[in-house]
Length: 434
Image 1 (tube, one colour):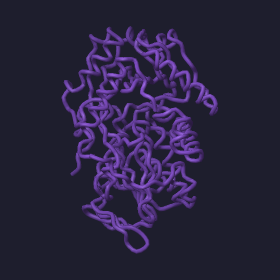
Image 2 (cartoon, helix red, strand yellow):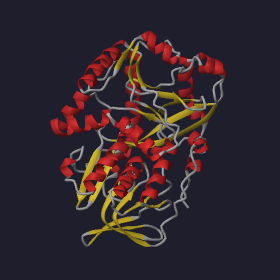
Image 3 (spheres, helix red, strand yellow):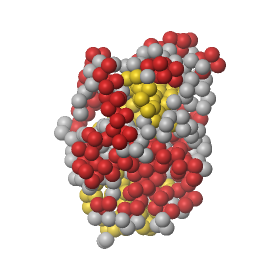
Image 4 (cartoon, rainbow, N blue to C red):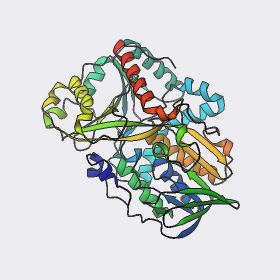
């Protein structure tokens, strides 16, 4: 049987704190559906849920369990925006699709928190806002530009002074910041499991422990084979992101499955709760190699960033994050770090998500490059509209060809080199131009 999350990442905090997993059986027979969704992360769950709510018959197959991948391992930050500032993304995608993606990305937290409320998902949702922080003068200028760009698009992004940032974080190491009141945090695994429950209530036939081993055209539709059964469907959605395998040619080689690492403390004592993120905003830094952190509902500090580009089970693999936290809050040196884990998310060559239609009736959506908690949920709903009858050209993203990355087999070397380069730029206080 496939390894569940608590065994694959035995020290993952969410495996211990999330709501109970949904009891989704392995597919053991042949079934028929209008639409098959492959992948039980946020994209797949949101797409399936919204399709069922539109009256379509939907089957969802997940190789492990809903939330096993990045959906159940991420930092739990619900943030707006993309890797780039809005004007850059609009230039990259053009006036039509660039404007659509920016509009959806800037308002994705609104969508997700509204969805959580509508469905009654218990996932520690906390709309505490997002702080993006600068620790070098060049980054301060970038943040000022960000405020102007977001405000021109109707988003009330605030510019915070050094004093405001220090009061909110308890750290004097930052020069300035921006504050987005629409952001916040969730227990990400509880969110995934809540979406799965809502999808089943809406009529989705959901099967866990069911890896698709072959996907083949059959007549005017598709047939997906698994170990003990098959699904015949008119259309198929592949939503596998950083855990994409070889079920469709070249897709795995079109993205890089970067590992992100996260650590968490024991619940902080009262005297530290008042000095370590007392405002409870979620934080991500404006550096070239992003570090992000937040506090959860139990008063734990969670800090994430880059780490070993492989499955890492030993606490020693996360020592750089512990040291980074101690630099910001020396008082944490007497606090135990009780949980540590990592997982993969898909990064594209330009850090923007991809929408592919490589064959009639086959839809692929992936590649959020670390900005997927809110955005993937919102884009799943948009994709459901296309599958329900809206033209493909009305989607947020343009249809693009699947392109293999050159030298993909060496992706670990490339990621490690890029991280070292980014850390060098951060030490020099430089901002990489986009």
